[in-house]
Length: 94
Image (cartoon, rainbow, N blue to C red; front, top):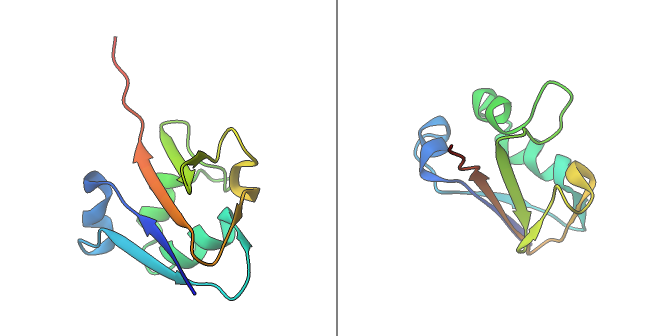
């Protein structure tokens, strides 16, 4: 089964223009495992989404099937084999 990691336009250039990155899963995995698999070929992309401790960066939001991963279990959030993971740059202003 294939989970999908959907990238925002601002990050697609770091993944050779890909809007979605497929991740093959036989069983549920953690969000960290899915992001590691999806971003493996693109370490700069990985560093834009996760910090040096492996946590989701403060200015990035990640949703697993519509649920905010930061409000769930962070990078330990379970991801099913057919899940959709959306990576979204946070928007702020003042």
